[in-house]
Amino acid sequence: MTPLTPLPPLAVGFDLDMTLIDSRAGIARAYDLLAAETGTPIDSDLVVSRLGPPVEIEMANWFPADEVPVMANRYRAIYAEHGVAGVTALPGAMAALAAVRAAGGRTVVVTGKYTPNAKLNLAALDMRVDALHGDVFGAGKAEAMRAEGVRVYVGDHLGDVEGARAADAFPVAVTTGPYDEAGLRAAGAGVVLTDLTAFPAWLDSYLREG
Image (cartoon, rainbow, N blue to C red; front, side, top):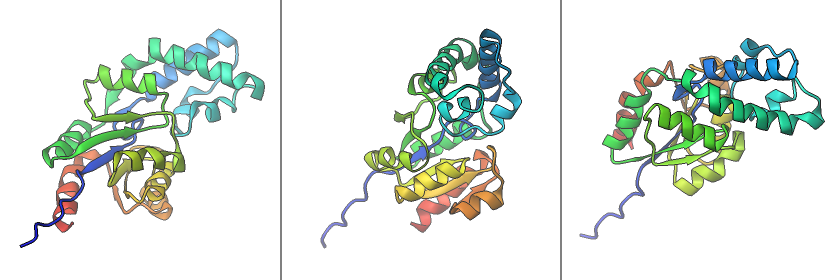
């Protein structure tokens, strides 16, 4: 018999903020400190209700266009110093990563977050992944997913679903971010989970069905 051609190694991608980690407290603290430093009123509660897009997009709501690059970089520096400690793992995050490893797969974080700060968050939580790609959003995530051979991508934002579909990865969505099940399904999510606690069982079923 001719041996079956082996499948490529399983790679599962994850968004970071509000998919694997709850970063709202740390982000709000960094924006509050930036507001105090610059004298610019910033509604940090509003900011953390719509996480996902790059910092520059959010910053444009609070600062003139010519100040956005400088303020975005200042925010990132403040976050690195004062925001990382406020971050926690979301329910099921560690188990979801472990489930991928148990299936012989690789874990890949593909996130819009500034890469050095994403590394700080992962290290602070001892959340170990096989690869990290930062500073990408929406369909811009597809290139990183293709490079890593991502077969399934998990996220909480409509942009995550868009990125997965652009990369021909199966889009799994969780409702731990700013969108509900209806919105995520309308965007094209293949399955919507309440949070990552349901992911290991779903992954097992997905791989068995093949």
